[in-house]
Image (cartoon, rainbow, N blue to C red; front, side):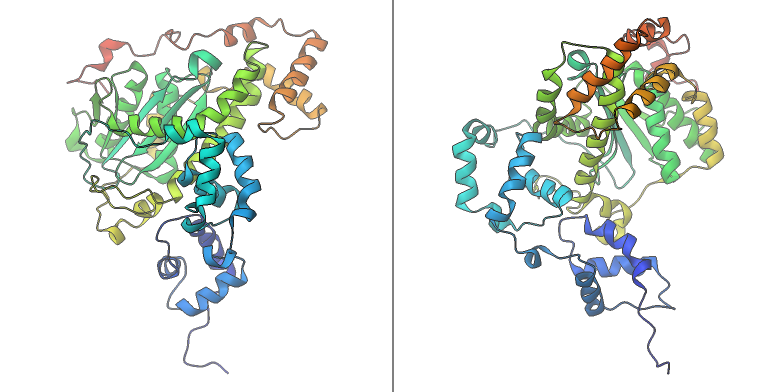
Length: 439
């Protein structure tokens, strides 16, 4: 017989959101998770108490740090494997990687034991010395709230060594990385605008302002942002909804690249340098860019789902970045997002990031068709750090054996200079006036 109580919410309704919240680390107590789960079901139809949630969580295999009971011995093998990929990561980054990739929640007590510190200082004295805190010149950056500003910047450390170009977008208030892209180009304004519009289209909203360096590559983002803001609010006609910063003044982006270099890139540079002298750039692009993009996506997820260390010099909320973005009211913050219609986003895309532009292709279509066939012949091997160059050599051998490395369009595509303006519609410096912008 039915009683006066509502039935418990079914597992299948709350499990997808629970899996998302479980990836978040940093003050994510059972109480907070239970409160967030209330938003995904009809509370007039179902109920979920804290005690019931704890029972469900344990039954579904979502064990907290104490319940997993990890020790130095149970994580040593995983630490060794992670050290190969991230040779300069500190204690904090290693904990994040263990949680994200191995689903192992390890207490700070385990990581602060003398045994791990002794192991690090004995095996990696140079790395330990490098991690010692230094003094920096502190800068002031003002941001009013969530989606007030999105900062973006390119990273060229791999551009001339490996032909790989990085770009990111960031909400500096929450610390959420909006995108982290690796491609064979990062100086074409159409490509950069596509990154921005993809996120706007996915979320249905954008920031009050975008911010970038004074580079030509950011011109179309400034145009698209201003176009969308003016579409949503005609009173803004004739205004620029983008903030230009001179060299090294785009502070949040510079900080992100600094952390990215220290915690991520060094492990992959060794792999890339191993075979950089040999081969075909198109085969390299075809294999390495999708693999590295997957690694960058994992880096973004780790960053967005883990609480950052407390900094008494920073006034913004200290919590899990993605949760600050999704529930700013919980942290006493304000959300300044601007809703953009699908029609306006499509118009902006056609104007400033046309989908058929060659820069958006990883490799030429004819090359991609052949490469897909050859990689299928090789058994579609999984690309990872240990075998990527072996797969590269095997795939390159397939092309050489077939005698088809002579197509002129491939040669042109492979030799495109990232710094040369090959697009007649690409804006020049005259288009990027600080005080006026023709939309």
